[in-house]
Structure formats: C-alpha cells, structure tokens
Image (cartoon, rainbow over all chains, first blue to last red; front, side):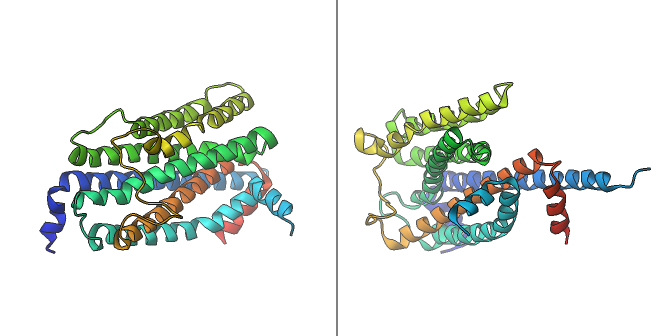
Length: 57
Length: 249
C-alpha cells in the first residue's frame, strides 16, 4: 500500500479523515484544557500557601 | 482495612485527591498506548470491508464514542442515586465532572455517525430511532450541565440536577434496544462485549482496543475534572498545603 492510496482511503477520505480528525482534536482539546486548569490552580494554591505561611510583618 | 473504611477514605476530598494523583499518570499512559495501537490497527492493519470498503474504518471512533457516552451516563445515574440517597458530596462532584465528557463523546458519536451515514445511506441525518435517542442523550447532558448553576441555592440545584439524571436514565435502554424494537436504518449490533462477534477478529480486535482506550480516556478526564473541582472547593483546607508540599518534593 502506498502512502497516497492510504490517504485516499479507497475514495472515502472526505469522510474517514474528518471523522478521526474531529475525534482526536476534541480528545486533545479537552485533556489540554483540564491540564491547563490544573496548572493554573496549582499556581494559585501555591501562592496562597506561601502567603499563609509568610511571617507577620 | 475494611471495605467501608476504604470507601470513606476514597470519598473524602483528601483521600480522593491522593488517589486521583496516583492514578492519573497510569491512566494517561494506558490511554496513549491503547489509542496508538487501536489507530494503527484500525486504519492500517485491518482490511477494508467487502461491502463498505474503507468507509467502515469510521467504526473505530464512532462505536467507542457511542459506547462510552452510554457508559458515562450509566455511571452518572449510579452517582446521582448515591448523592440523592446517601448525600455523598463526591458523587455530586462526579456528576459535574463527567457530564461534559459524556456530552463531548455523544456529540462526537453523532458527528462521526453522520460522516459514516452520508456515503453508506446517502444522507447526513435521518430521524431514525437510534439517532434521535442519541441526540436526546446529548440534550440531557446539556440539561445536566445547565442545571449545575441554575439555582442560587447549590444544595437545591444539586437535588434537581441529580433527579434529572435519574429520570434521564430512561433513555439508556431506549438507545440500546432501539435497533431491535423498531425497524431502523441504523444497523443492528454487530459487536457485543460478551457474546460472539459478527465481524472477523482482525477487524474486531482493534475495536476492542479502541473501546478500552476511550474508556481509559473517560476515566482520565473524569479524574482530572474531579481533582480540579475538589482542589478549588477545598483550597483553604490544611491538607491541600500538605498535598502541595508533598507534590513539590
């Protein structure tokens, strides 16, 4: 099988690739969004924790 | 440790956060490996179908999306009942965290089904029992997400939302048996988890792997969302500072 025939998907490329592409992009977007939210939360919690434990001026 | 002690530990915000933090990397690894294998086997190794040719390969994303959308709703129903009867707070967090994941997968099942339907049936959409009941599932998921913040009193909102989840579970057997109860354009079940499969092993094996990959993905996303929600809610708790310190080490 050549790369071109693989990409053509027997003439169904217009249906097969958008199906796989849409699924993978949503999976990646959702997991990236959850991870970014987590990183931001950790940053916020760390700064809160440092403020809480800082000596009284 | 008794089963009840384990249950209480896991359903406490602290116990859950530690448990989720330990599980997430393994789930991510398992999901990546199974997804990579399933994609290669489904797109390259499996032969083209004798009737549907290469268009049949959409099965490797369409069926897992539809299967996991139903699986998540089944879990939501159990969590909603747990929340309504025993008032386990974490069960409510589970409902909030899993509903967007279920909604995304339901939408993907509809989109991929439509992309499969056009070359096979000659139409993007038809008001068929299976398709309509799956669309109804998407609306139910959207309703659950909307109800989350619809009430000023959080407790009241939670009761309404969980009751809505339980009522919406009526749609689950309708989706599953729609192809058997009505004469539909959508094909009947060709793949069952426990019974004999109607498709060749070289085609069914990647599908099984993709089902595992999507189930792992759903579990991963639910744990990520739940951990975020728990940390946000308990941000002033002492154990959060201890957990942060342990995480940095």
